Image (cartoon, rainbow over all chains, first blue to last red; front, side):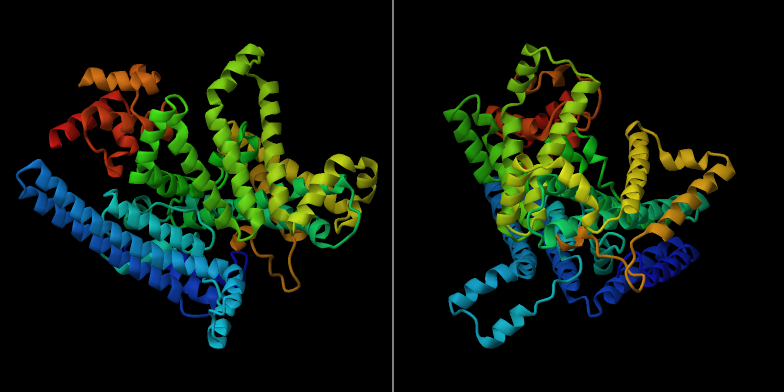
Length: 526
Length: 77
């Protein structure tokens, strides 16, 4: 079920009305039922995948919690240090086995669903599939939001194991946590302890909150329908149109458009998700902080899909570094190379995170290379951090507006080169683009043929105006202004003029399908 | 014990010694890589095991919190 559909709006309105009518202790039930309905109506079938993940996470969380309590009791009865160590080790081993079982089952489903197209040819070639098995695996349909709820469930189980939260005693509440309908398709990745507190506190209707949530939803729809989907037409015609001899300038424009399309699409979705959640007084974490103002790639990734980055950092990087393997590697490296050695575990952890990030986003070699590319850049920046400061001093580079702009341009260039890999249909096409941009830029030919790729002169002007508006809002936010609060403080005619302006722009110039449906969100496919 | 902890902090994050707030990680005084290095040094220096559950922002919010964590773990061991 798309956010921009009649069905969703009806579900949202009914949920909203029932939610604020019921006493606070039953409010979470309305949200759980709405999330279940969103899921069932969205997939048109029984939500078996998410139910399995919710139940297995519930069982694993409860077993881990029981094991921790039993360990405390057993330790209280121990007298000497060695005995304590042995008891602790025995309990830890049991908990580790439980967690591994949970990961294998849930990640197994995710991997099968996501990578079956890659795995199947190998299974067929090895004669490992019967005709019935082949038919079954060829028709596997990925459950809605599987990437999101699987990682969220793993985070919950790890948090219980690390004693950072208590195990949930009510399986329906855990289902709500995993299936929270504004977030289940693409995130943001929330943390159990924080979202649980949000669901459990009392929620009282406030007009200001409703208005603010709806404004954010409309702004997200504007970014999606007016900017992202319009840019998508140009990008699609350049990369998927099968035209020969495209000048490098057109390729460069299409890559820049793709960078903005992806950002407008995904951050637009987040605005809608956070807006819906805000109307129901449930705070979700921010997932974007104007990443294209970043002065380094590391900063870019701290501002882009913030919650996924934090998830990988906490549950992959941290788990690796704190594991026996990570610790032994770190100690051995420090002995061998006293200076560089202290970075070794961090470097291996960083590469691991980026390999996983690449594979999580897509199943092709291009995505793997994309992950390696960012991993290498992150590792280099970690190792060269101190040297970089020395070079800056030697070259008498002063921090200031010009230097900031140069750093931002460098970030854009690095992201630009990476996005060619993931947007082109194949490595061969990516190679063609990398070659055409510096050798056959053809700026005049490019400018003269810009309108040959699906967008008219009027569409470009509209995009220019929309992006200028988007940039203006972003600059205000970057300077610390709360734009919605500022809007609310404006005189009534100006305020409503702004609301009507954006709403009309959205209605008149949004890209809608034949039956007024909308294109799917780009990140939904990751 | 205090002297040794401060020595380790000085080696990896000198700013932590003069920081007087209560959220070093959030304020960017100390990053997660530095925390991991400090954890490893503390484990070696005091023959303790710092479990993943203790490596949270709360226990690394300032030098006093780190000292308190080491003190508790040494006593526990």
